[in-house]
Image 1 (cartoon, rainbow, N blue to C red):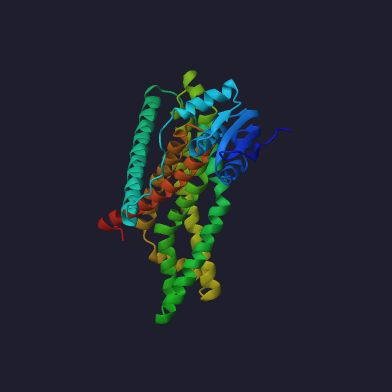
Image 2 (image 1 turned 135 degrees about the horizontal axis):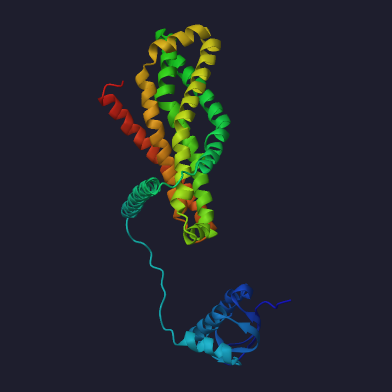
Length: 368
């Protein structure tokens, strides 16, 4: 068993005479520094009985010797070299309190975060440009598209997401109908709950909630998978054998998310409409046939086209963001988790920003 650090002391003429035992190392120090400080004056420090000493232990001895003017005896050649190195270091290390105001510190944090977000955005745009160039080179060189890889991603991005997206959209449809009916009942206009559910589901919430779910499921999966491949040097191995990681890894994932997003968005909208219809049937006693007929009257085709235009853009954004964050992994497994979180946050943020942009754009061209 490895002996922990300890010491014995006796009273001397100029103060306590201390003789260390065991290992004066960081792992074995225990409460030795506190006990040394409680002794008061120290006249000598004897190192003849220690088993081992490291830099931390030598620093404890040097500090005590400086503070009390004590002599150090019995040091081995290795211990003496450490003590000499520390004795020659006369630097003073002090922790300075940050005396800036709370507002200055907060302003600095906001500035740092803004710069970080800007760099992240520039990196994503640059990565998207590199992906477009890789796609152009693949087409120009007449290399076959990796359909097998794309179809495999259909399974993870699309098919596996159907249950959770369907359930979530169905419940959201019920919530929209219930909350809308509560407000419209004050004016005796419960029938317009159908208008609310139909237009909101098709035009906005169905696709937006789907994009958020896909970012959380697939965007994070892309970042984690590619990040792990970076750590295991699979990406470097691909480059070594002449395979482009952009073509083999990134393009199939982005293509899968781009193609499946319109389908998932339409599926989510239908589930939300069904959920709203169930509530209208049970809670408002509106027959299903009346509900369907009303939907046909109030939902314009422009809402459907708006959803189909936004969906591929959201899919590209989620795929590019997830792959970009995965490609940024450099050091260790902890960074994989950090980049995965960044992929989800960045994708959701950019999706919401783009959705606001599309809302203003469609309104300006008369698609109200």
